[in-house]
Amino acid sequence: MKLHAALPKISYAPTVEAALTEHDKCLLEEYLNEVRSFWLRAPSKVSRVVVDLYIDKEEDIRTISVTHCVDADADEALGYWNLVGQELECWASGVAANNAKAVLDLVSTDVQWRT
Image (cartoon, rainbow, N blue to C red; front, side, top):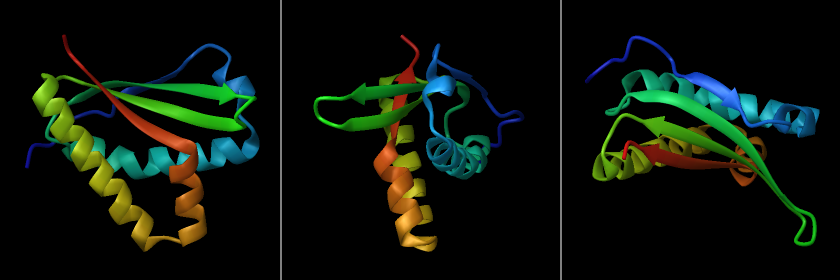
């Protein structure tokens, strides 16, 4: 297993932090705490993470998008995306079901690879 020396830098899109509720921040922090350990042992190095917020008031949709920028080609990045998804599902099955469901309902995981 390959271990990476450092955690990626997490940046927030402009105005995101101000738009997050305290509840949103707590759920996002739970998500980030879970994936931090995965980043250190992930098959592809995560160079940075970008947090954004998507709001559709007409549809009453509110989603925090967490983009993992990986140092990988498209195929490796899709493999990474599958693995991080499995990691989150495994985590969700082991914690209080309501809290994990709330996290996974609010936070979406996206992967960006090098072009």
